Structure formats: C-alpha cells, structure tokens
Image (cartoon, rainbow, N blue to C red):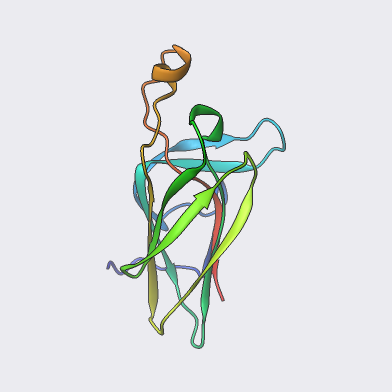
Length: 139
C-alpha cells in the first residue's frame, strides 16, 4: 500500500481521494434522494485506515438494479477475504463485514455480470456499472 494519509471513513463527494484506488467512474448523484455516489467498473477497490481495535467495515451502497434481471450478486473482499454481497431491491443499504486486526483495510467490490446501460436501454452509455458506493467506514 502507499504512504498516502488515510482516514477510517470515506464519503463520496467529500474525501474520495486517496481512498478510492482503482476501478471507479465519476461521481454521480441519485436523483431520487440526492445521495452522491461512484459506480465501480464491475470491480472497484478502496482503502481505509483501521483504528486500533476496529472490528468491522461498513459500506453504504446500492447498484444498477433497474438494468438487471433478478437480484444483484457479487463479493466484497475485505483484506483478501471474500464475503457474499447481494441486493434484490433498488435501495441504499448498509452492509457490514468482520475485520481482522490490520493498520489498513482494502475492500475490493465485484458485481457479477455488471450491466452496460446501452445494451439494456439503447441510450449510448457504454460504461459497465458495478456497485454504487456512497460511503464506507471502519469501526
């Protein structure tokens, strides 16, 4: 990992960098509720500091549910340990995962079969859309 100063929390639109490390689209806003988020490109990674005694990492996320048939399925790998991640409604939800002692936390998000809006809607948006992340924190 790098020597960048990390916080134990990231809120999209406030302190995205240096926390979002790879695989992210530009910031967007959910028109329904005003939540700022970034969609990963099928796979995206982020890093956070882990305070001494931290036991969990929490993610506030959603996904491109309207572009997919059925529930969204994927993984959240926390420091290399994979955890199932699924969402069957078009909502913003919090998901929490256990954390082993570490100075930093890397979370890699993967959405299986990340959709392309143009392939579904014919709207010219050729991006692959993975999980939508609004915030993440360690405690």
